Amino acid sequence: MRLSDFGIKHHLRTLILLALIGISASIQARDSKDGATADPRGSSDISQSVVDPTVTTPFDAAKVVAEADTAYAHADYDKAAALYEQVVEREGVSGAILYNLGNAYYKSGNEGEARLCLERAKRLDPSNKLISQNIQYLASRIEDANKAEMKGKKGSVAPDPTGFFGRIHNRIAVDTSSDAWAEMAAMAFVLLVLAIALYLFSHNVRMKKIGFFSAIIFLFFSVVFVVFAEMAASSFEARDEAVLMQFKLTLSSEPQQGAPAVGFPLHRGTKFHILDSELNPDGEIGWYKVQLNSNNVGWLPADAIEII
Image (cartoon, rainbow, N blue to C red; front, side, top):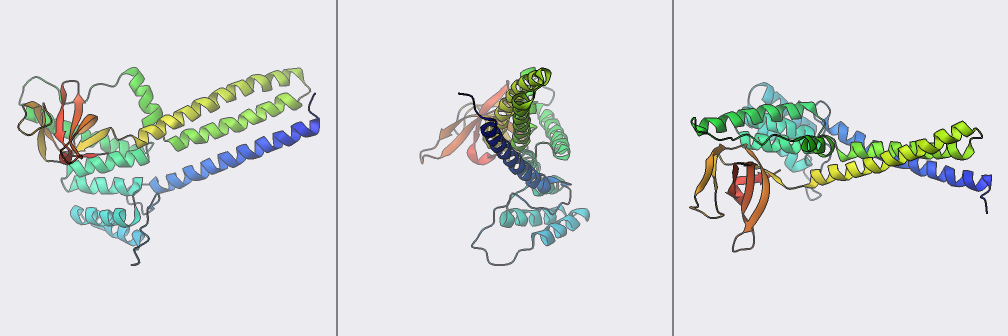
């Protein structure tokens, strides 16, 4: 039995309303996140925060950030880092604060904390070019320090080059946030609904064909964008990367003290991929198997690194 025009219009209005509600919620979530990371250097916008309900002492985060910015501008980097840490401890993390904190740590000579903060800031705001540029600069400085430890010997302390498919994956899952993909999926869904409406209600055969094939295209992109959003969310939640926090350390061939060394000494701030872990007698992780590149794979004590 064919549906009446009234029934079709009623269900279509319901679909369009649901689609508009979905895209509105997605855009609001994206705007909230962007507000936390706009103009990172000196920003006082602290979103994505976690407030401790047991704290009753008033804490003016904006004032503390302003003091930290002033200390940074006057080259008092240790004070700036301490103040930014207060904000993180009391108000939670954001891409802007971690960016500022990472810069302060780098200026104070702590490449390990600087790399950790910048890498975490990138996860919160993957599209921020300033964060990416600072990570690239810091990584090049750390790589130069690692090369100096080779003392002219053959080998490599640089990460393996990223292949074609690896670059595509990074562009999708690392350099673009799940919120951005979710927003595009919602937009594609709205266009899908409009294309269906064109197909159902147009009396022109040509317009019906346009609506039909457009609906197929928008359905395809809706599904693809949802998959991309899931990939980006999984990358954000992954705990498969770490930063060396000790001043200088060499990989071990086995997860035990006194095991033969692998490769050359590596400086703090070096970034690794985590491959495996080994529990200690207490049932806690005591060692991590890490990889710098295909020639540098070994074990490090758990207290020597911090997971990003």
